[in-house]
Length: 139
Image (tube, rainbow, N blue to C red; front, side, top):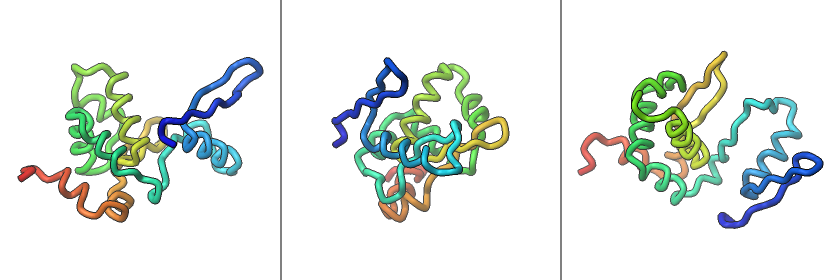
């Protein structure tokens, strides 16, 4: 299912190719009363896939973002200030990969966005994984 795409019509002459899981999420969220355009896709805890999480954590820049957020929830703007040499678009992409894999949450907070790790969901699904990832000495 991961390799398949669904074509979705979103205007009279435009189509969008998307992942079936993401399409189903958008369709169900649009039916709910609390859906806003600021809502982002966060996979449910029972749908977390180990290979997606390991891929997201395999990049050193993403691992550094996770370690920064592990000390406590972080404003997205603060996260962008941590490494001023990297382009903002690259950091945003890294955060999107982490969010879609289920490693972190990215939620609206006032005029900004708040980043936090999904430690409870990850520990319930894969016990000890994040403890091993966040350990200072990987030995």
